[in-house]
Length: 200
Image 1: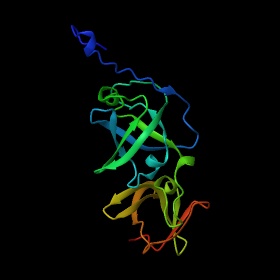
Image 2 (image 1 turned 135 degrees about the vertical axis):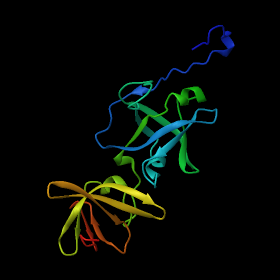
Image 3 (image 1 turned 60 degrees about the vertical axis):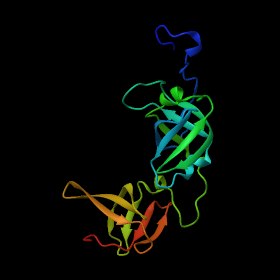
């Protein structure tokens, strides 16, 4: 791309040459590219989770364009990551085929997906947010409290956000995801047992 009247030595090529691919069946959306970072093709990411380990564990990120704004590519493309690291309250990364800031800026708003199979194995008392979504929450008395629809990071703790139905209306309930209230998490049974009452 050459600005009008610019000499050849000032031409900047911002064409994206990323490989079109199919999105893996187990792909999980883990973040979004915020903007370019620095001048060497690095870019800044906003992770969807307070624990962005999945972004560090995989060198193959799958991008889909933003829902709004310019679309520098269509469908799904493969981004081969060279390096990813934490920086302040976000993550920054560099990738093959993203050589400069101009090219990195074209990725702004892109959605990042990673294959669930490439996530690092958590310790027995740790869980990925994506694995908790959709689980049924039941208290010690067998009362169904709702289904996990979201999680929120609130300082040092994570809070489960549940939805439940009553009188043909949808209600919301929040339960801190801490040992004091969470008895067990059974991913196979897709159930969380809690010490919590419906009227809390």
